[in-house]
Image 1 (cartoon, helix red, strand yellow):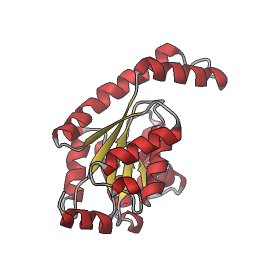
Image 2: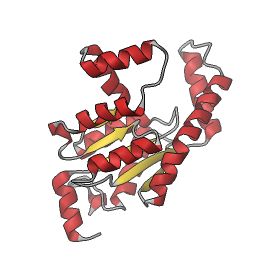
Image 3: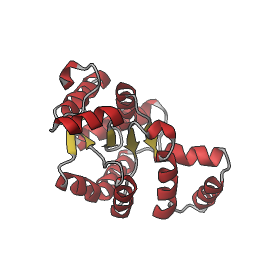
Length: 211
């Protein structure tokens, strides 16, 4: 990687995306990455809740769609993400979580970031499905969620695989995919992510692994 690119990366900060199946600890790892790199973790779910809570114009639209039991369309999701990425705390990098989810959203994000740099890496947490099902079934039992059956949990895993496969293929084709084993202790997985990103020249300032 060229010195000029590394210098730009240090000035601007990392622009990352994280994906992972239900039960992989994606939310926890997103928080760790954001803290380590000093960048905001941007979750579409959090954005929706923020706008709904504050009753913004976009939030009222989202609320009406959710109340009707429908999915928030790409156009509205794109507007919300674009607005969030325009905020000052994203100027030095960000971590996207839950977006993009469709090929159309990928194209929109490409255009949105075209002027000042695209995503630098897509962290994909991988895990054995049977292990994730065991983990989520145990968690559901501990929390008394009798309706969260193994069948329901496997269905969510299948939906995730079907929905994210095209996105993963797009970023794999661009050479941006960084696959990390998501099974293990929180700190252990976080260390794997840092090492995998450092191997791409995307390191935390002062991290020996990034040298």
